[in-house]
Structure formats: C-alpha cells, structure tokens
Image (tube, rainbow, N blue to C red; front, side):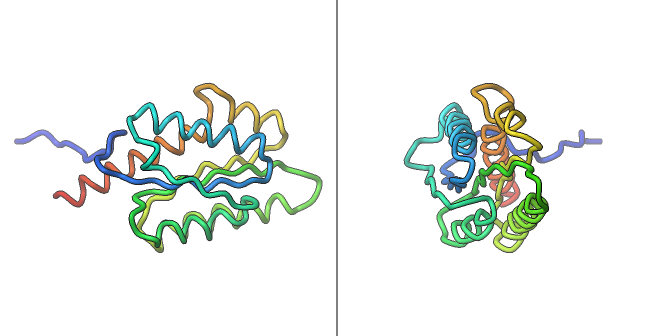
Amino acid sequence: MSEFRPIEGNFNPEGANFAIVVARWNGEITESLLNGALRAFARQGVGEDCVRVVRVPGAFELPLAAKKLAESGGIDAVVALGCVIRGGTPHFEYVCSECARGIGEAGLDTGVPIAFGVLTTDDLQQAKDRSGDNEENKGEEAALTALEMVSLFQQLAAR
C-alpha cells in the first residue's frame, strides 16, 4: 500500500506575479504591513518586477480593488492589507465585516487567492504589535499565504 501524501503548497511558486492592495487609512500601520509583505516576497526570491503595489483610501475599498486586480489577468494572487481600530461607534463592525466578506467573495468569484492581511484591533498598540518589524507582522504572514496558495494551485493544475 502506498503512503498517503497530501498536496501542499510551498513558498516558491514558479513564475508567479502578485499584487498588494494596501489601505492608506491608519497609514503608519499599513506601511509597516506593506514592508512586512515586501520583505517576505524578497526573502522568498520574488523579484520587485513580480509585485505590483496599489493603494486605496481605506479597508472598505480593499475588496473591490482586490477583485479588479484578480480579474485583470497576469496576477496569480493578491495580498490585501489594511487596519481598522475599534472606536466608540459601530462603524468598526461594519467596516470589518464588509471588508472580510468582500475579500472572501472576491477570491471565490475570481478563483484567484486573496490573502487577508487586515488588522482588526481594539487599540493602536495591538495594531503596532501586529505590524512591527518582527515575526508577528501580519503583512509578512499574508504574503507567505499568497505564495503558498499560488504554489498549491500550480500543483493542482499539474495533476
């Protein structure tokens, strides 16, 4: 009997192109997320010419831009980066909910992986902790997710 071997992605998809859509709102945090994502791509050997960065006003606009990029052709995965910090009104819940729903829907509609790198935190310190120049950077994590999903899809297509 042969050994069962699951199909898994790795961080080295061949010939892949990526887009990062990043919100300008909470720019100190989102720039740190972007830097983390770019570091992860560079560390895995993805050239600058294979990563397109697109900016949008805020997290609410991420899903539409991600979908547009995914539909454009030539993009194998999109990384969506944003930060929503809880305030004193229900606005936080609406933005977070629609952002998450929209990003998931965009990936399902297009068949292109869209990695969710949107922080939804209770305060600024939590956002800083998750976007710092360290292993906790969620932008880096989202870029690695995009790499792994593209690799997985390449393997599935080859079978």
